[in-house]
Amino acid sequence: LIEAVNAREILDSRGNPTVEVEVLLDDGIVQRAAVPSGASTGAFEAYELRDGDKSRYGGKGVRKAVAAVIDELGPAVEGTDAADQRVIDEILIETDGTENKSRLGANAILGVSLAVAKAAADSADLPLFRYLGGPNAHVLPVPLFNVINGGEHADNGIDMQEFFLAPIGASSFEEALRWGAETYHVLKGELKAAGFSTGLGDEGGFAPDLPNNREGLDFLVKAIEKAGFTPGADIALGLDAAATEFFADGVYRLDQKDWTAPELIDYYAGLVDAYPIVTIEDALAEDDWNSWKLLTDKLGAKIQLVGDDLFVTNPERLAKGIGLGVANSLLVKVNQIGTLSETLDAVELAHRSGYTTMFSHRSGETEDTTIADLVVATGSGQIKSGAPARSERVAKYNQLLRIEEELGDAAEFIGRAAFPRFTA
Ligand code: PGA
Ligand code: ZN
Figure 1 (cartoon, rainbow, N blue to C red):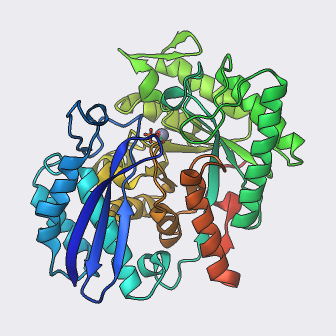
Figure 2 (cartoon, rainbow, N blue to C red; figure 1 turned 135 degrees about the horizontal axis):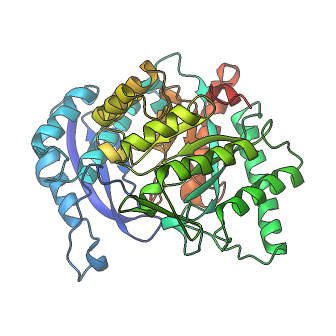
């Protein structure tokens, strides 16, 4: 039974305040969870409650969310069995009482939801991935390393937000991590030799001032080859355009030009022909459903098309997309929806509908590694947690190393099978 719930304000990887929650069970177990925070947030995400008091942290303090945990959410779940996750999440949602968790804050609610799951797992003497995923949880995900940062995550001229290395040809997670790190270091040397900055963006990738997006992909291909790997077969590429950020008044603004959606879709088709791209996330804006349908009809059989701002881990928005035949993959961010149960519902709906899933960190992260366990628990097969550098990013990858070790011979790294549509 849940005996007490505490919360505090801590800092995230960008130096902004965020919520940490601690749950105490009556058997003496204590577990905590910390909540991440996005920069290129979708308009349809659950509400992140910030104080707005400009005298502290420029208005970004989370004392109200902390108070919501201590005064309302905690007392509402105290005395409940921590193993009853769905009951607890329902209580949290009802205590807040709003559609988008705006009264008490999705950051407050998620902290409690995740800390309860971790405490329940510990109380059952099981690792979190096993507690949530059951005895058959054994699939290690392909890591998607965001090694060039642009958009809202860097102060450079690159419009697209994320350029991924996806080591689909590795035979284990440990090997995929090594391939990613080796290529990351070669990429640094290549950028430096070409006279570009090797300063880092928010997710640990380099933030060079490249003239256009194709240049970023060219650097990745060069780095993969120079590191001794085959582009495509060993390490494939991916993009998160985060297109909502460069869309306004019906026009996409990319590479110093204005594009209509059909023109932009042709541009993506050209990239897919020219580079070994397995996945493109948020290729179009979050409410441009008609264009998303055109994109999916054109490229959906060849590559993975991921909805992030489009779906915001929300089962209702995902159901709409499935009904329309829009995208073919769900990005999974626990704080976009605000409870563990709703997150797992979205993942289940995606898998049932033939959509792949990719678990994701946020650009503002902490040392919390819960998503590493969740990706194994659900058998998703894909995770993005930034570059293979910076502790808040590698904390998740390091946790996956531990899980792979713990599973031993039972561990399975599915590699390119995680991307069933990629046939190139
Ligand atoms: P965010 O970026 O955490 O800043 O929203 C991540 C993403 O767009 O996938
Ligand atoms: Zn995204």
